[in-house]
Length: 218
Image (cartoon, rainbow, N blue to C red; front, side, top):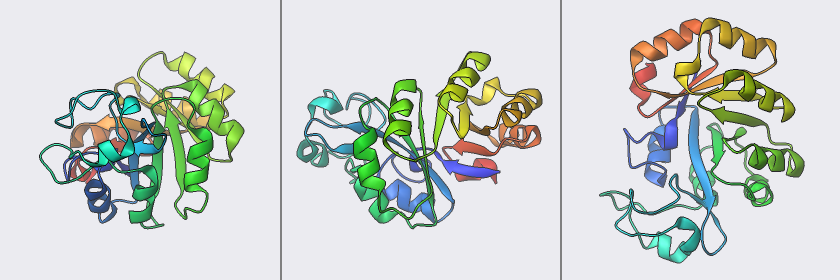
């Protein structure tokens, strides 16, 4: 069962920062990160639509230039908001990356950023259109993220020719994992809160768990 560091594992360092990815890379073979476009056009690694929760600034990431973002710090750290390219620069090739797209319209730029990356890459999103664009723009495998409507989600994943599905862990049972496998999907569950849930998911036969703390799946 693969263990995927959610946003680089906020238990180790502030989420979606270079420090988090570097720390996760010493412990895990997979990390997950969130990608959106900033106001000056670059792809940056940041979960929220707005800056309010994670920085002292206000406003939308989409309205904030890269220079402005990099002048901010995340939480109480000295870490700034990284570009997607910068994250790939610090991750060893052996670390696989689950790139979660937070919006559509990113596929072509994503393909350009990762074109020379040696890492295994899986692109996920709640947005089916974002995944459809990735399928059209590149050969990168995709995974559909969802938190409800199991059968509907599997139908979407089938239509998108997904390599995997990423359901919330509460949706899963042994029968559902078996159904997903029978339909050709790997199953990576998010975001697993404790060892008991991780143990149960392992018994169900999931392929991977997304965690904030690597110790949860230890």
